[in-house]
Length: 73
Image 1 (cartoon, rainbow, N blue to C red):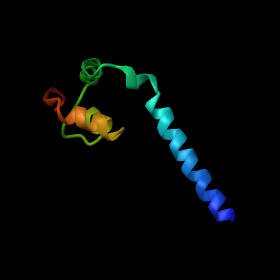
Image 2 (cartoon, rainbow, N blue to C red):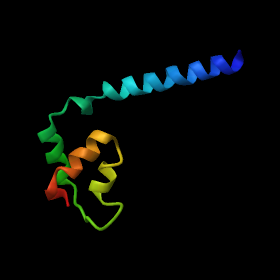
Image 3 (cartoon, helix red, strand yellow):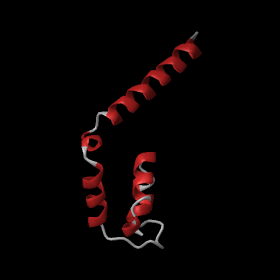
């Protein structure tokens, strides 16, 4: 019983985190503006700590956006 409650609590917590992320103000920015912001950050495409690599680790959408913006590389 305790395991079931603990598992359910974990699932609900993960769902809340997901919904919080969806409601974050950054999610309301137009794609073009987000791209412009990415381009303002200095980059070095060979450095794994460079901004396109870091941005690409934030979420699947940012990864796709970085990969589809050649000027970042």
